[in-house]
Image (cartoon, rainbow, N blue to C red):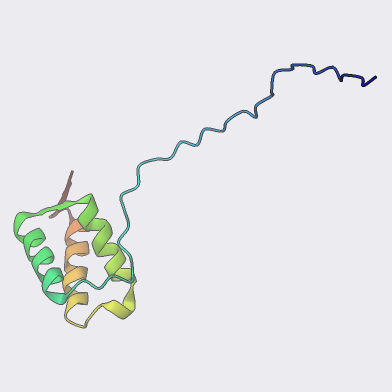
Length: 95
C-alpha cells in the first residue's frame, strides 16, 4: 500500500518589497551625442536675448561643457558667458 503524503497548505511568505523613492532627474544628454555648433549658437543666442533658461537646457549645456572633446574654441566663451550671466542673475531659470 502506498502511503499518501500529507500536503500542508501554508501561506507563501513573500519578501517585503522595497520602495525606492527617487527625486526627479531630467534626462541627461549623452556625451556621445554631438550637438552641432549651429545649435549651440542658437541656444546661447536665444538664452542671452530672452534672459531665461530651462532646466533641461541648463543640463544640456553643462553636459556639453563637461565633455571637453566636443567643444570648439568658439563655443567655450559662449558657454562661459551663459554661466557667468546665470551667476550674476541676468539669466533666470524657468520651467
